[in-house]
Figure 1 (cartoon, one colour):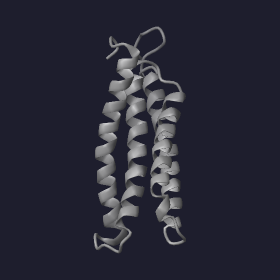
Figure 2 (tube, rainbow, N blue to C red; figure 1 turned 180 degrees about the horizontal axis):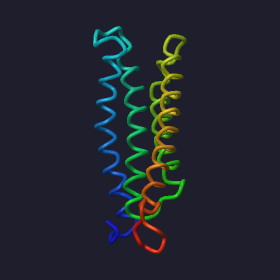
Figure 3 (cartoon, rainbow, N blue to C red; figure 1 turned 180 degrees about the vertical axis):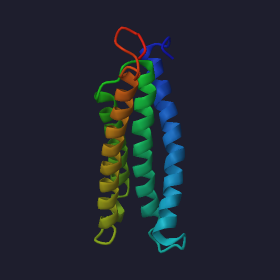
Length: 149
């Protein structure tokens, strides 16, 4: 992947990250519905599914995108923050699309979605930076001169 031009590599990394995050998000939405009401529809399944979809998808996208981009070149703090910002844009678009459903009852679900995405995104940023810092640090047991202990 290092030989690909940067714009093409970015597109491939973004698409692969999106595909992996989509699979994880669907599984998170199904798990969220099951945990919420054991699959017996109380009428809130769509709202709960969207919360799970966005929260798990955000976490997976930020971690996978940062990991894959870090394999190409040294990734700075801007990579996970930028991918998290992209996920927030998707959530904002989704909130605008479902704004007609916003009332006193469903307001809790809107707040829960933003809170869940903010929490999962922050955890993903911290985790991805930790993974990148571990990958960039020299292997243990090796001196700076290259001699092993």
